[in-house]
Length: 194
Image 1 (tube, rainbow, N blue to C red):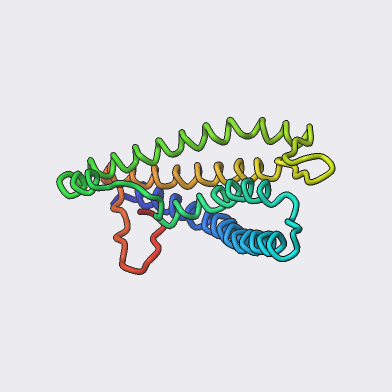
Image 2: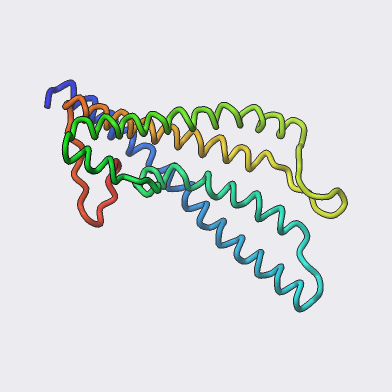
């Protein structure tokens, strides 16, 4: 490995370490949010059954929460290598031609960069519009909830996922160029890259 490739790999790993804190923090917030939603849904069910008095807005809160939770946890899921993917063909290519396999991994992650760049680009103006206009869901006089916080979560979650995909793509591109070998995952370890 050359000095230049070591420097490039160390920069990529440093970025991955910096990304670890915000992605993990958002994933923890998402997990706590799941627990809070469970309590809310159970309270609503008991309120309906025992008191004939449901909690207003539970369907709206739950539907928006699902979206928020997904985007809070997405970047960390990618960072931990837990995205669902079919790697039957890729594992065969990597065994047959490791360099080509790394190039295909880089291409896969590049598609992720493009996908989440589009999501971030598309949702950002919608977030700004919802914030300025006070867009909400629900019924006036009964329950309303502004949607800008969820749109902000989508923007932040998409941007972090985009950066995580970019780090993965650059890592695999370096490996494909035979500049750096990818770290070998060990059972039980959470490698920064898959």
